[in-house]
Image 1 (tube, rainbow, N blue to C red):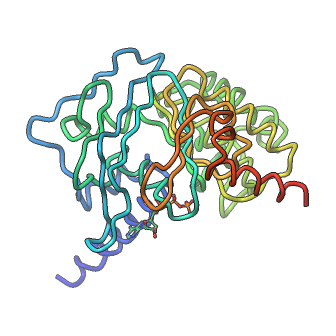
Image 2: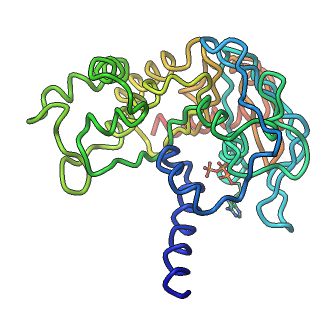
Length: 299
Ligand code: ATP
């Protein structure tokens, strides 16, 4: 009994770690079977996306959520991401930004309110179809101790080598890979090549592009990038989000100035919303954050 208990408990710990960091969704699928906290409803149906090439319409309706009963993390959060548009969420650390993504991916269920994708409550659809429709580029990408080609192909194991290369090209990492000693066959991870944070993120982008999700969640890394890398990164983000329903959890305001809508979160509530220019003109919290980042950039 004890022998059985320890490995299961260990897997539970891994599952929670992964869930917490929104790290690697696909890896999580295999672990999901070991600890199912969220179950499909008996009548769950596959999520229907009206226009997959544009992405779905996503709505949060009065969503309230807590991890622990005494601490409300989201309070009555409502917003809409129209199909094919980009919404960015900003706010101080701990405001509840990543929690929105965790709920959308159904790692947890909200205690009240609804999350609706193309008219379907996510609690009524199968988790498999929900997670297939959403691609996440996480803050911190997990790489497997395998080749760089394998690490990209993981987004769609049935993809051909040409498709893997095409995704790598779109994520602007193909030429870097071609110059490695064994190109796509180069080993990465603990026993192989160590990639920088930016390179890892490009692998994650290529992996996600290969998956061709209808909707994209981009969890921006907190670490500062130099301005050249940041410009390249902004372009990638822009290309990735084009014509696809996208949610960006942002730390650097400069990366999201073109978002169709920016939500400002504070203590679990959406306190401001609008475009970059509208929010600057409103001279509220967002304008304050923008000024602070501008000042920090000048130092
Ligand atoms: P950051 O910008 O630092 O990534 P965030 O706005 O994304 O922060 P969340 O990760 O959504 O914040 O967390 C919101 C709050 O919920 C935080 O106070 C955090 O400590 C708490 N929290 C997050 N995960 C859990 C958990 N599994 N159990 C209990 N509390 C949690």
